[in-house]
Image (cartoon, rainbow, N blue to C red; front, side, top):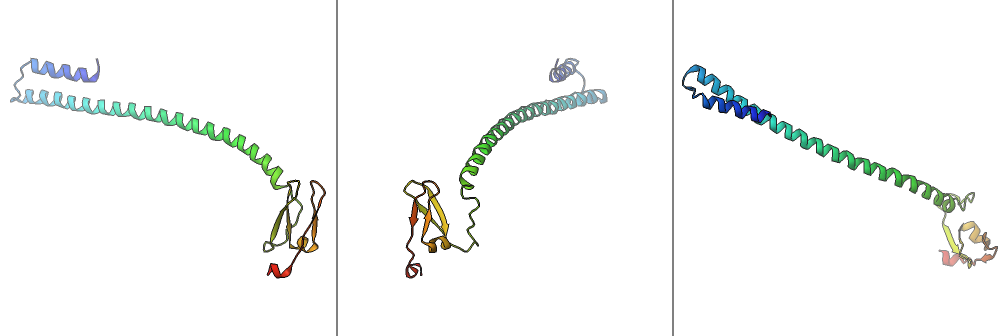
Length: 147
C-alpha cells in the first residue's frame, strides 16, 4: 500500500466508525486524519517533483556529455588541421623582416601563381625573384604616383 492508499484507508475507517466529531475524541481523530491526508498530498507532490527533477538532470547530463564529446573531438581535429595549415601558410615567409608596423606591405602574384609579399625597400630595388619558379619580377617605381 502506498501512503496515499493508507491515508484514504484511515479516512474510510474514521467515516465507518461514525464518530461524533462534536466530542473531543472525535474532533481529535478527525483532525489527525485530515492532517494525514494533507501530509500525504504534500509528500506525493514532493516525490513527483523529485522524480521530474531527476529525469531533467539525467537529460542535461546526457546533453552535456554529448556536447563535451563533440567539442573535444572537434577541437582535436581542428587543432591538428589548423596547426598544419598554420605551419604551412603562416610560416612560409618566416625570416622575412617587414620592418616597423608603419611600413607598407605590397603583394604581387607571379605567373606561376605564387603570392609574394614585400616592403618599400624591395620596391625601390626594382625587382624581386620568385622563390617558387625563380622568375625575376621587375617593378617600376614612380614617386609622383606614390604621393
